[in-house]
Image (cartoon, rainbow, N blue to C red; front, side, top):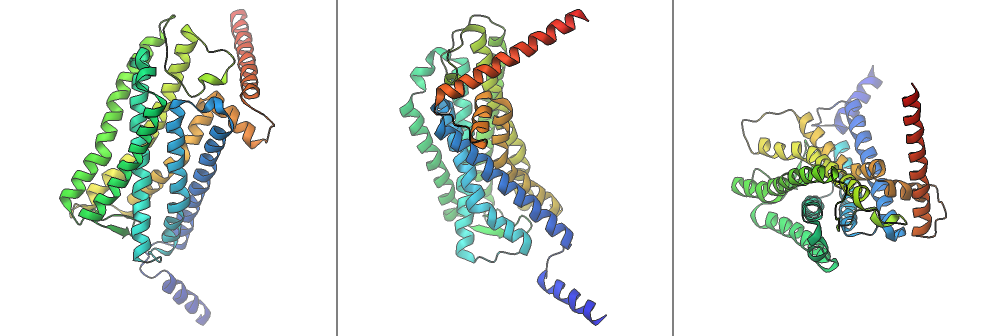
Length: 355
């Protein structure tokens, strides 16, 4: 009995103020650890593929690159501190580190939001105004846009230092903006840095998908805009094939953006609960929304791998250490896979006709 009392006393001392059970702590730590590993692995795979194969280095994929960098930095520089805080149920790294980590969280998250917003603008021009694509979306302008994205992220952080502060939220196990300190700033922050980009993206993609569906029904369509895998084949498809390919690329980006909204929107809603004194949502809601927000950093590589043949083939090449020397080898394998898929499709069609 004395031994059991000592163990219980020791356990209570190490988890003082923590209402969670040991099983809950282990479960949360395991989930966060898996999310971190998936985010680091997946985004590293994207960056390696984009570096290794120049056929993937298109204007659209510059934004994919920027998104992967932001997600990777978030997973490496910020998420591990959240993992430790989730276990200790406290911030043990000091006030200065809380300010630094809060700033990093804001920078990388805002960079992701802005990147996806500009992706929707790029896709809007490529689908709705294809003849003006090369004129409007130039390499120089893409570089300027990327610079503006990170400038916007830095402005987001500095505005917090001026009008509010970064604070450790125990129930989220993360250092973030102190939403309760300045109500007016919280509303302006949420409106400018969260809801306006989401609104722009949603409106543009409604137009994009409507136009893309209409274009897909046409056989001869003039297309100028690049897509993520457009240069990975030996021949650039024209007419119906190219329209179908552009449509698939647009749908893929739409899924990326939709996933981002699903992962971050509940977290954004939680902000208004924090500033409302009458809101008594359970801590489990904030834990779950924090998981969702972090999970988004690992989702993009899964989406690209499932939906984009060129990325999928590049991932396989990197993971299997295949000795592809350049774009021709990657293109050859992609072309062979397409021929195989076409043959399978033809066989299935013939079989169905004989039934």
